[in-house]
Length: 272
Image (cartoon, rainbow, N blue to C red; front, side, top):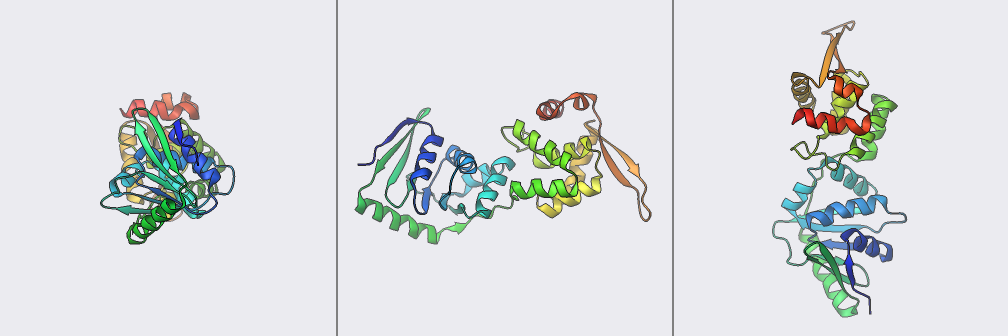
């Protein structure tokens, strides 16, 4: 009989299931925490990942994927064929992990999580058939966030390797990237990186639109906000034909003195 997974963190349970899985996995009705932890565990997983069919409440998925850090790493997993997302308007009652040989019910008890497990063949088969059917009837979740690997690669190509290193370092210093008071958003981070590297607004906004982060208009509006608050500054750069373009520069000496690990913290303190 497969042992229950008790007194563990959700990431430990997810990693244990992924390590033992030999075929596709169904992750049914995961909590917000479980979705976030799955993306972290799968991103850091050392080995061949099975394809995980995540069937989740649509509102929960939207809330979680509003965080650029989570969503961009999830997009990488989707590109690699390790994750598929579908949503249901009415989520199942149970939160389950289903593999080819076991069913694990995820049970939260305060700050503790248990994985109640069965490997009964008939039950596993019935659960697989049930949720495979629900999967087929579910709606594909459209994740519009670009994969983080493509963001980094194109940023290095279009703006410079220094900009990519700064972008990665800032993301690494943040717990979330939502822009709702819980962290800077991806557009603000991109503009701060561009200013730190004295890139043109045209270049960073074109890159951002091409890679799928946000429209040029969104970059322009955010630039104006940051400039009005004194975080960034601009200078006109004449070109052969047309209106001068704007070079972005750091506008606050506190940001100039901060290293990449502190840049996000200092910027958030100014914005708040």
